[in-house]
Amino acid sequence: MMEIPKSHPRYESLMRREKLVAGIEAGITSMQGLIAHGRGEAFDYLIGERTMDSALQATEVAAAILCDANKPVLSVNGNVAALASPEMVALSRLIDAPLEVNIFYRTEARVKRIKELLMRSGAKRVFGDMPDARLEGIDHARGLVSHDGIYTADVVLAPLEDGDRCEALIAMGKKVITIDLNPLSRTSRYATVSIVDDVQRALRNIIKIIEDNNLSRNADLDSILANYDNRKILKAAINEIAERLVNLEP
Ligand code: ATP
Image 1 (cartoon, rainbow, N blue to C red):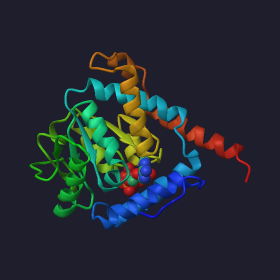
Image 2 (image 1 turned 180 degrees about the horizontal axis):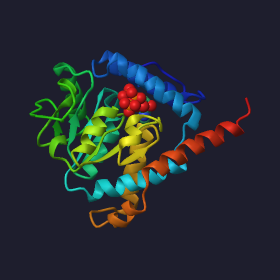
Image 3 (image 1 turned 120 degrees about the vertical axis):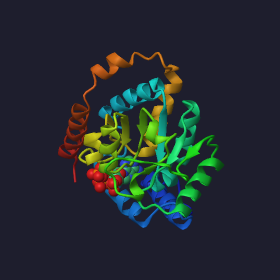
Image 4 (image 1 turned 30 degrees about the vertical axis):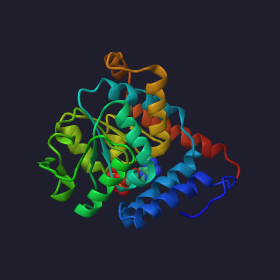
């Protein structure tokens, strides 16, 4: 990866680009993933590259749901692998949840490389290389999942997910937590909880909340969920972005 001085005003953002380019070179990220990143990056620019209050609220609810889940599964695609493998693995170990490689532009070689990267990063269980179940209504390769992983999970954390798959998971009765910088995406609108934040920032926040609060299965989830309205959180995210833009000096 290119050496970027920490003092550079766009250090974090440039590092993300470097990681994705390294992901392409290592055969884990798709070219289309670069374009998807560009869309996210544009939103992050408008957000101000920070965690918004609304995102933090969603993150707290996500942490409670993950801790209370019977069978949580963490879904990893090529961009997530390049940008946040250590964080995905750390979370999976913290809550004892398996990871599942689930990619849009599937090739068996890419799945294998992502699995190997996760295992090298300390993952204990990684599904996805031998899919044996299908998501209803999703065309062939994109709908492939593991029966003992995503197919039978009650909670799926699916960062940078695609709207159709998110909808299919919700239709199966699962709770879906997504991390997506675009509050207008179909994924953000369909998910049970949408965290409008960068994937690495959001995962670090989830981990910190669980560690700091010693969250466990007896979290008072019913009342947390009863008071949570995902549409309201998305609206709040849009308002936070708009307010920042209105007050920005060119
Ligand atoms: P949808 O089907 O949900 O409308 P989409 O077609 O807009 O999704 P995809 O290409 O399927 O988008 O998914 C990429 C999504 O991930 C985009 O919405 C983009 O904003 C978001 N994204 C890209 N990079 C990041 C990142 N680093 N952190 C969080 N979200 C990101």
